[in-house]
Length: 265
Image (tube, rainbow, N blue to C red):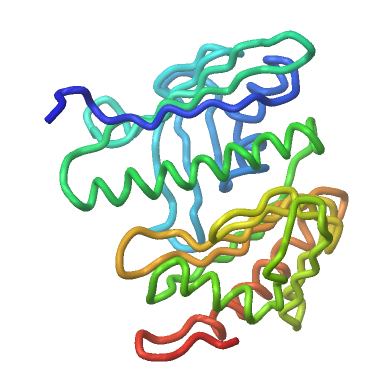
């Protein structure tokens, strides 16, 4: 067994100046526009709170362990708390681009840590792609998010088949295709497919507003998370986002089976 601590180390090329990219990865409004809602005190030692849903149990408290604009920021749980740490590095490239590097450390040993490592690595790849979409298409703007997620009692393949079947997603779907996800009763996202792979797809939205959309089935174990996430821009974003969230939450609650049911198709 290696004594080298495990780390997730990922990089992505994004358009923008270091200052523009820094705003996207280090400030509350920036992070909220491609990941989950954040509040960040923009200084070393400041508080940083991530909201993964309603309720106090879904609010994750942390701190800004390092603040070196516009090139390095570190978020963690505090000096004595242990746990995960997230280091973000920004390096300028020619032609108005930057490299964003994420180094995620603090993993322990054992099966639960293995599952968390795999899940985070899978999730970070998706969100880094959404960061690039944000900087490519909506740089300097702020999104309002509608992040609906339900636990599915089964593997991602089964969950994905249930979701795509219920929404009528074509089997032969490719980048550049137009896709209209319409679950009725306000649960609708439509736009251009910009990424598609096993158990996930990403959209550049035009309905219900300009933005980005992520649809995924993720998990490593007996259950998985089935998610429909939208990041909406424009003057109506703060009004639209709560309604979009509520509509997709209702739709997912109907589609999600109990452990012994067959998914709705």
